[in-house]
Structure formats: structure tokens, C-alpha cells
Length: 485
Ligand code: NI
Image 1 (tube, rainbow, N blue to C red):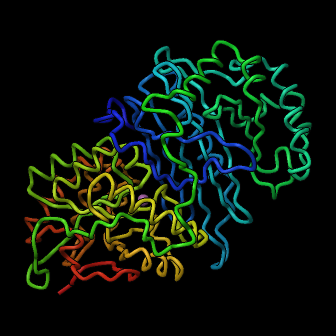
Image 2 (image 1 turned 180 degrees about the vertical axis):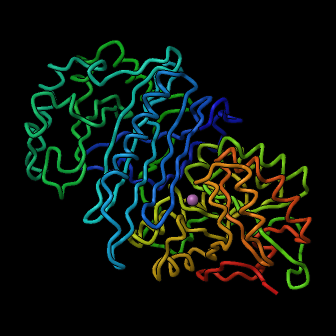
Image 3 (image 1 turned 135 degrees about the vertical axis):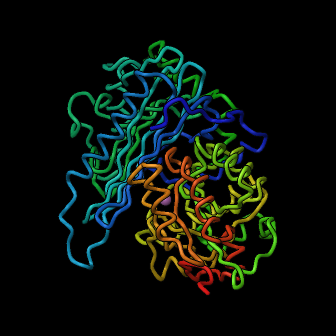
């Protein structure tokens, strides 16, 4: 889906050490690896697959390294998870049935030029309770090689050490029994990683080795024992964790620490005043205004989109994912520098209507923070993923000073992946005051933008940002359009 594209920049910025990821991806009962700022990785193209219908809410993104074997293995894993989820969906049920959701993303936990580890993190909800699933990848991007967990450490010695670690924690973890995963607990572990101190961390999903209510459980092998059981590959993996590119892992703060969920009104967000994007005042009661909006970025095609917008002298609005901003901080800064408006699309594209209040606050405030940090502007707009919202989401959006901006022209660009169809949909359905939904993570959508702008102008529309069209948007209030007359 993203052949040949590359990230514009990968050097950790000086401020890159203060990643504010809200993720609970690696939360577990036990020690967890430290999540690194993803832009330490060079030349990573992130693929994103999204689907958004009443029947399924799917968001998936995964990294690609420009190496055929490694890329195929990673893509295959993620695509299999998507198709398994889709195949097992319950038939659309009654009105009160909550929407199924699949959220698949990834985190970097080790980064050396010749040794990288990512942990895929999946949340799947299809009725009943949701399930979370990890999957570790260890790879050498220079040789296009993927390593099994058995290649990192001597399996027999590691399994003996894991049995001892489990025994030591038995009193603290209900129902802990490594035997539940068979005779090779190392091989059965979905996550194998290291702590910044070099201890081996072996992680299990819910219900795998302990009572389900314990959640995910990790076992830690002390440094001396770890050193005794690592292979050469394992030692490289350990070193890539203890001394990653772009700084020590502890330098990336505590990404799994919640963003002060106890003070949801977000005084923690940068004190910068919300600044309206440049572009000046436009009276959309006099002019026929339309706002073009882009969700899910920034991504590999966003710079090209900025060139088109510049050439057409058009300002647009970008609803960004915090996770993508952390991966493409310079692109986010370029969007702001180009005079475009930036709003919040949550950190990792979770459906907000199913989250607890502290998690909603984390999603909103962490994304506000990273956008403010990387662009110098504090966002005032929220677009909830899938448009999913309820009264709680409104209340929390209000506390976070975010107006809720939906849309009334859905180009379905994510679905058709067709430039002509995207152009046609945008032009056919636009009216005065329309907010048009597009996604800048798809090449086909970005390619459609020039023709969309030309077509709208030919019909007499003035293209504006959302805040130009709705200058007094109120926090916590939802808007589907600007002035329609
Ligand atoms: Ni989205």
C-alpha cells in the first residue's frame, strides 16, 4: 500500500526525549519494556489499514522497513489478525449491541542499526469483553532477517529460568501456572523483550498463564541469569534495548504512565494559548465556504499533500493521531508551518465511546500535548475516530477545550482507494458549509486533492479551515457543518 515512500526525517529531535505516549500497550502485571520514540527508526514507512463501517471498526497500522522478507512477515501478521477478526465477527445484532472494534498498533522497544524490536499490540472487541494480544518481532533490517524468540536465548536454560521466575511470583499472581502454555513457555510467549537494565522480560496475554483477571503477566529473569542464557543474537538484542539509537530508553520518560487521569481538565497541556491558524478571517455567512479535512495522519504522503495545497493556495484541516505525530514530528510541524489547522484524532485511533473517562482523557490530552510540542499550537478541535461519541465523550472534550468536528461529506476514500471516485464523491455531495472527510494516509486520496480543489472552486466555493468556517466553535459541542446559508 505504501511502496517506495519514505519518511522525510528520522533524526530524533532534541525534544524527542519527552514522548508522551498515553499507551497502556505494554501495561502488565510485572515489569514491562520501555517504549521508545518511534522516530528513532530510520526509513520506516508505516502502513495503515483502516476500515470504518457500522459493522466493523478497524484501525491497523504497522511498520515497513523497505526489506522484502521482514516487511512480508510483518504485513502478513497484521493482515491475518484483521482477517481473523473480520471472519469471527458476530452477525449485526440488536440496537444496543456495542460496535465491534479492532485496534492494532505497534511500539518500538529496541533500536540499533542492525537490531530492532517492535511489539504489535492488539485490542479486539466483538461483544463480551475485549481481548488484548501482543506479538514480538525481532529483526535485522540490514540483512532482512527475522529472528524467532528461540534464536535470542537458549530455550532449555530460559525455560528453567522462567519456571524459577514464575515460582518466585506465584504468591503475587493468582493462578500463575506456566504449565498452561506447555513445555516451552519461551516459545509460547507472545512477547520477549528486555528491560533497560538488560533483564529478559517474557510476556503473556490475558488468561495464558494466570487467572484472567490478572491481565497480562510478565516474568523477568535477572540480569546475571539473562546474560548466561543469551545467544549472540540475544546479546545484540539486549544491547539494542539498553543502548538504543537516539538515547537511553529511560530518556523517553515513562510512556506508559497515564497523563494525570485524576486531573482530566488538562492543566498539564502546554500553557501555550490556542492560536488560530493563519489564513485570516473569512465570513462564511457571505461566502460559500467548504472545509477539506484529513484524518489519521501525518503519514508518508502528507508532505506531497502539503505541496499540492501550497500550489493551490489552499488551507485545510488535519485531524492527527498522536502516535503518527510521534512518528512524523517534522511533518506535523510542516503542516502547521504551512498555515493549516491541526486538530486531535486521539492518540491511537480508539473508539472513544467505549473507553473509561481516564482513558478518554489520556487519549485527548496526550494528543493535544504532542501536537503542541511539535507544532507550537494547541489544538481546539477534536474529531473522534469513527465519529463514535456519547455524552461522556462530550463532557471530556469540553474539559479538554475541544470542539467536536464531524463531517457531512464522506468521500469513502479509505474504502474505494480510487482517485477518480474520491474526486467524484467530494464534488457531488458538497454543499455550502460542508466538511469533507478525507484521509492523507492514502496515496489515492492525496492524488485526488488537486482536482477536488479545482472542482470546488469552479462551483464557486471558498476553501477554508474548520476554524475559519466555525470561528466560535464551543468545546464539547459537535458540529457537522459550517454555516449553510
Ligand atoms: Ni480516523
